[in-house]
Length: 173
Image 1 (cartoon, rainbow, N blue to C red):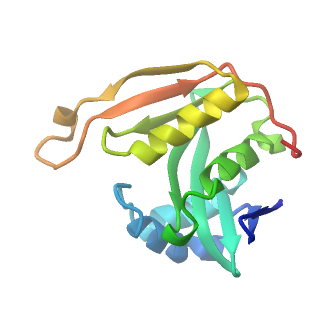
Image 2: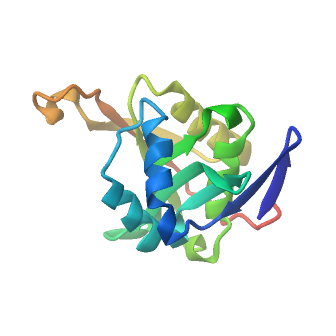
């Protein structure tokens, strides 16, 4: 799926297996996101490619949305991370990636979207709030993990944002 935003051509597609390292670097440059191992991003680009999205610009991944269908509740799409290169932020790329994954055949049975967001991640919270508002979907927020759950590690609490019930999005939306 190709989009143009503010004279910027963006291609939204499934990740390629060989893009794990580039995605790792994108996440590393996207605080406050937690950086996982490079291996993790290779798993996402292979085992979970059907529910992940790359925003390609200039032949390179400049945005990445990782998600999966919950094994215990396959009607729930869990959005793990959303990152957009600093040069493309504020152009709607994150919302385009979320809409893109929701329009895929693999997500036709999705009834709810879930994600966790720390209190300092205002852009992520704004993304999910604006997505819910745009499609007139209910949004519920509950505690997921208190900061104490991370022990001695420096980590904020995480709230669970649950959007839905949702309807499948067509590719033109």
